[in-house]
Amino acid sequence: MENSRIERVEFTKQMKKEYTLLIPNMLPIHFSLLKNIFKINGYKAELLTNEGQAVIDEGLKYVHNDTCYPALLVIGQMLDALNSGKYDLNKIALVISQTGGGCRASNYIHLLRKALKKSGYGYIPVVSLNLSGLEKSSGFKFTLKFAYQSLMSLAYGDHLMLLKNQVEPYEVNKGDSMRLIEVWVDKLTKQFKGNKGLTPKSLKKNLDKIVQDFTKIPIEKTEKLKVGIVGEIYIKYSHLGNNNLEKFLLSQNCEVMVPGIVAFMLFKTDNRMEDIRLYGGSKLKYKGYQILYRYFRDTIETNMLNSVRENSNFVVPSSYEELKKLITGFIGYGVKMGEGWLLTAEMIELIAHGYNNIVCAQPFGCLPNHIVGKGMIRKVKEIYPNANIVPIDYDPGATKVNQENRIKLMLAVGKEQQG
Image (cartoon, rainbow, N blue to C red; front, side, top):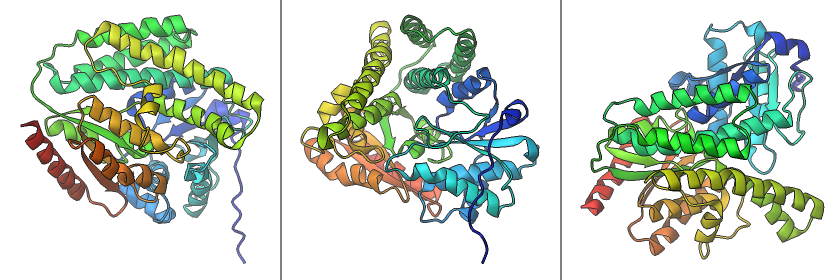
């Protein structure tokens, strides 16, 4: 009988000098900065941008189609890259996050290794990006400094994404927003390299300057349909996962709002405290999570929101604690698998900010997302009759044409309501 055990190939110290780490893409702006942070910390790194049917087909070969769609796409994107002929496969390693908890994302790394073995790439090492001690490699150290820089890259990425989405639809000179983002990714990379841009004071200074730079982009305000995007975290953000949803909505004369990832990080930290509050646990751990939560809230989130509020007329997102209040009477705080109650709260927040038209991105195989997304639409509409929400399924068998036609129907209803 064939031995089905998958041997782990470790990423060694020697490999750090010679190997290029391939990173799957989820948040295009945030991960452009994150890739540079890998380089600052002494790693060769490249962000994968390959998309299209070939990626899906490659994923389907090695990942069961009952597995969640994001897993299929992430693994398919990596295998497609390995097949491309672009890389020296003896000098390549793959990076994948490992979260722990109830989400199957913790198992992606094992599914990836199984797929590599079946496709003849079993010799390629896979690096686990985690803070939980799930896996360690002698050649890869996710130090506190590295983790903090990564956290800050997500905060800056949120800020750039928020402003870009409110400026891009109205640009006089198309492409100004993306060009400004490239400028700021370069600036922040140089700052991080010199251990700058990381303190609360420099964070606030950078955030304020970013807002001021976006206000200088020439715009022409025209009537647009305001559309929000919520959903499972990968499909919500990844162009590969949602078939370039933001680009499609822009082509339909829409202004798009996508809630950022900082609220999700607060949510995940708060969940740890909620577990202890509900079920008991270590008081010391609770205190540690509380310190982390307060840092996210008071230093990162507050500075982000205040910089927009004080320097512009852009829409300011709700704070995490405001989001938490929004779900009173809708859903309990113990609903925390995947995006949990936060997804429902984001739908309500978008409606409160005038983004009544919402696409809820539903990946196949993500039961929690269907419960807190599609499952809550009726309740949301009872309280907010003008809510115009469409759940869109993203899976290997769903066609882009069908998805876009369903979104167009939602937009048509939105235009009627807009008058």
